[in-house]
Length: 320
Image 1 (cartoon, rainbow, N blue to C red):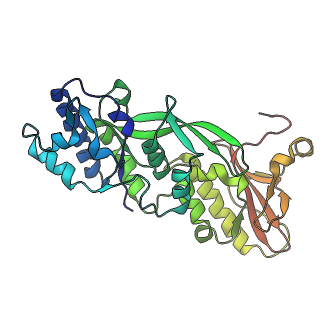
Image 2: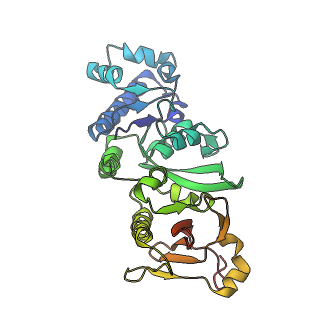
Image 3: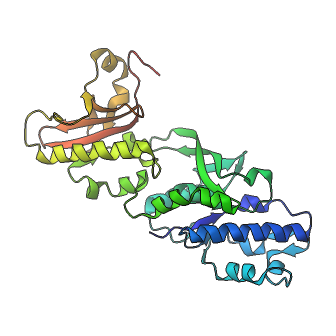
C-alpha cells in the first residue's frame, strides 16, 4: 500500500527570526522528508496554502525556492516530491474520509485544532514539521480527540501521533513504517471494513465494536482480538446445532453472573444486524489487555454475532 507523510501546518505559525534561520529550518525539513521517503513514504499531503507559507519576514517559500544561497538539491527535491492537496483528497477508504471531513470530529493540540494531525491520525502515518518551536522536537505528539459516537455521545480522549522534525525522529519510526507498509498489517478500521471477508461466519453489532475500530496497527490488543475472532469464525463455520462450544481452545470463556446481569444488563445489550436487541452475556476474556469479546450464538440461524469488543465492562464486583 502507498502511504504519504503529512505536513504540520502548526509548525509554520512561528516565523524564523531571520532569513539564515529560515534556511536552516528548511534544510532540516528537507533532510527529514528525504529520510521519510527513504523509509517508503511516497509523498506528502499538504494544505492548499502550503506554497504561500511565510518562513521569515519578507522571505516566503516562493523566495526560498529561487534563493541561490539555498542548496540546489534541496530546492529540486521539494519541486519533485509528490504532493497531494488538500489534505483530504483521494481518500479511498470511505470510513476514514468521513472521519477526516467530519467537522464534529476534532483533534487539537494545546487547544488549537489541527487538520494535519487529524489526517495523520486516521491514516496512521507520520506528521512532518518545521523545527520552528521546542514543541516539535519530539518523535511523538499527544493530542486531544473530541468526537460524537454512533449513539450521539461525546467522547474525549488523548491520542498519540507519530511525528518527526529531524532525520533521527524518522529513523526511530523506521521499523514501524515498514510494518505499516506491509499489506497484511491491519488496523481496526481496516479490519472493520474487511470483516465480511476476514470473518465470513461472524456478524458484528455496530455500537459495541467502536473500540475495535479505533485500534492502531501493531497494537498488542489488535493481535489478540484477531486471534480470538479467527477462532470464533472457525467455530461458527462448523457449528450446526446445539450448544456453541469453544472447548479445546486456549481461551477463557464464561457467562456473566446473575448479580452482574441484574445490575448491568443494559451495558451488555446491543442492537444486532437484523435490528433485534440481544443480551450478550457470554464472552471471551483477553486478560493480557483486560479486554472482552462478547458474543451471541443465534441457535435458530446458527449464526455467531459479535456484540462487543473492548475494555472489561462493569460487574457487580468491579463496577469501574
